[in-house]
Length: 250
Image 1 (spheres, one colour):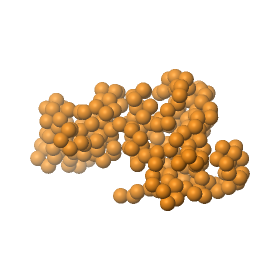
Image 2 (tube, helix red, strand yellow):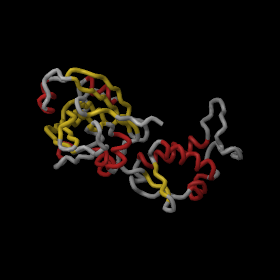
Image 3 (cartoon, one colour):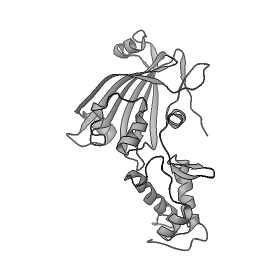
Image 4 (cartoon, one colour):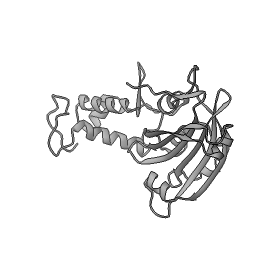
């Protein structure tokens, strides 16, 4: 492998103008997930096998895998090995879904899809998803419920080029991140959210059974793939009368 050097310290020393070796290894392994060579739920080769293939130390590989595990790209299972993280409901619930009923346990929400359409991206969509002029998107409108009570009015936009035929998916699954990974090979690795309290617009209020202007929490989220490219823009309007946003900070 290019730029090999003394790795007695794990190969992570800082050199001006030089990317640490374990980061180079990590970039190579992330690309294997991005290009589909490593599928979600698949066990990956051992540290020894990867180190032998790339001609680096096991310490360097371990450091790269540690960072990928901390970023929820990989999952270590005691006695079984290391796997590419999948987007099952448990992972989505605790990594990406933060709304809970007051005084209740966290549960995965149900979804009711109201509209799905392919359309030309407007200026805001292009900016949010880093799309070029003339790009198309698939938009999804749905309402999510917790414990049988409507809690979230949600608008989702994804690049049509990354998810061909998504607008024809029937039925549209509840766990979209699982669909993105399993059907299209686009696992969501991270998301950035901004939160703001607003007065609920009339259309969303009708969907949620609220009075127009009732207070709701707006969550604006950009989800990115393993290489950091935006793959979904999601705006959720969440009831705040009997629900709350719960974030576990560590």
